[in-house]
Picture 1 (tube, rainbow, N blue to C red):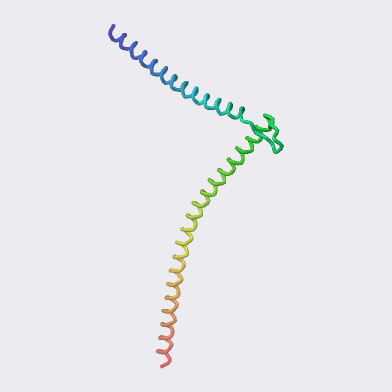
Picture 2 (cartoon, one colour):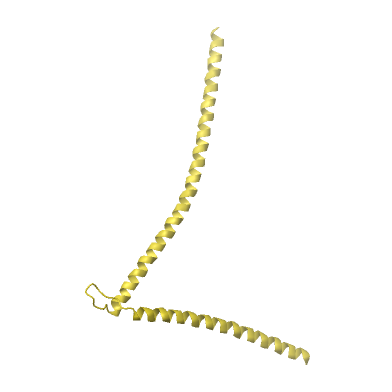
Length: 130
């Protein structure tokens, strides 16, 4: 009997936990929908006038707002792409600098080796002539 009661209590607590999570989710959704509704109401009540002082119709206001959002989105995307390219460019620049340094070192070693070969050839050439 006690085990059955314990199982029932565990099931009840699990159900209460699930309900509380759903309630939290519902409250969050309600809050977001209220914020969205407030923004829509604010947009609807906003009076936008054209250059002649006449109120712009709702559909044109929606189009203006959509254009503003599009421009803002394009600006943000541009900034993000520019930041990405800058990071990529820095990486490539660092690699290029490393490669240039290695190339300079190899060139110096090559010049030194050529100088040694020339020195040995000159030394060998004078020994054979005498």
